[in-house]
Image 1 (cartoon, rainbow, N blue to C red):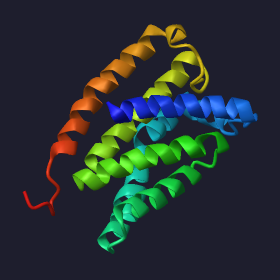
Image 2: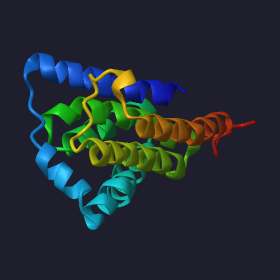
Image 3: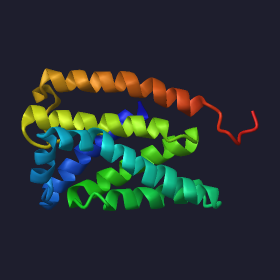
Length: 178
């Protein structure tokens, strides 16, 4: 629940901050073009999240943890770099915050699976929004103006993510002494 609320709040605040500061979405046309073809859609929904989770959570975050770096330092460093590689000023803050949540999932579960599932769902929802509305999601739009299909997708995502997050949050870690 916390991750879903944080994801929505992050998207909303990123949109508001971007509009207030006049920051452009420099990749909107590129991302929209990807979403409109099968290979691009597959890349946004699955290949991107898989490669990013392998690189940033398993490789970078996991590597720092294995070397004894403090979990919070490792999460923050890997998350900031995760945000920066999106190369879109409007996405850096949101992607970094998402990286923190995914890093917490990875660190707590000691598995790439929950962060990968959440990342795939996040990107799939964003892709669905682009395909339905014809543009990247405007996080400042009224919830009531959101097409019913998008609300349905969000409910399905919540139904999948909430139990996974609860399961992995309560699951003892491999090095716990329970």
